[in-house]
Image (cartoon, rainbow, N blue to C red; front, side, top):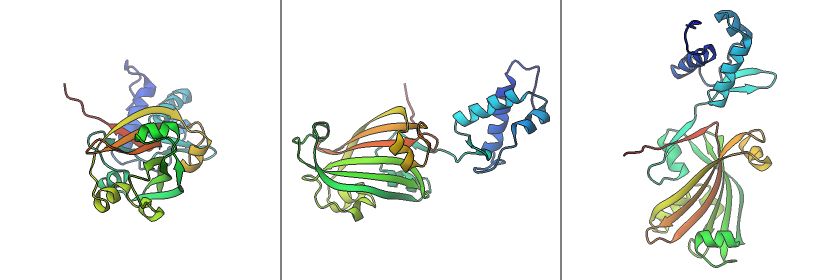
Amino acid sequence: MIKKNSPIPIYYQLEELIKELIEKGELKPGDSIPAEREYAEKYQISRMTVRQAFTQLVNDGYLHRIQGKGTFVADRKIEQPLQGLTSFTEDMKARGLKPGNQLIHFEIIPATSQIATQLAIQEYGPVYEIKRIRLADDVPMALETNYISANLIKGLTEQIVNQSLYAHIEGQLGLLIDHASQVIESSIANQIEAQYLKIKKGTPVMLIQRNTYLQDGTPVEFVKSAYRADRYKFMIQMKR
């Protein structure tokens, strides 16, 4: 199982061994991982080597530590392909997960200079500011803030935004959402993000800014989101 004469580092061999058990389903999300001492004794290796393997598995999102309780198999990350424009609700349903929203804030505010520029409207024009926690099977995935021109999309209510905005815009208003641009960057959770996403302050997150447009090029929404990096990953296919 562990080849001590191999040129492959021992910590990496142990890391791959545990990964294989997780990927085969022999270790399931929420399962407790044996203590470092047990692995060290079983394979006759140092606890420092085991700790190095555990740390890398935690960094890669396979394991997570709970202080005072131990190390556990982490929930699998949700993978979102970066092809095609879909809503969060559509993404979760496509993966067999129950989408949900927890509305934190909903009001019409005057557009700041930045928001006005992103939505191609006049500064101080009325915009909906919608802050929601996006859920998958009742687990927080992202903290999302939407800005939408109130002159373009009229009659939004809390009931509507608690469902699917895209479904309302296209199905009820008959507007065709055509394309979007999206920027993704890494960051660490601030106090507010940590509170709503139920993670520790300083935990890695992915910050995403999306600008969405109608078929005629009119900006329909400006969205800023913080996604949990331990629960979400993005995948893109590239062809030369």
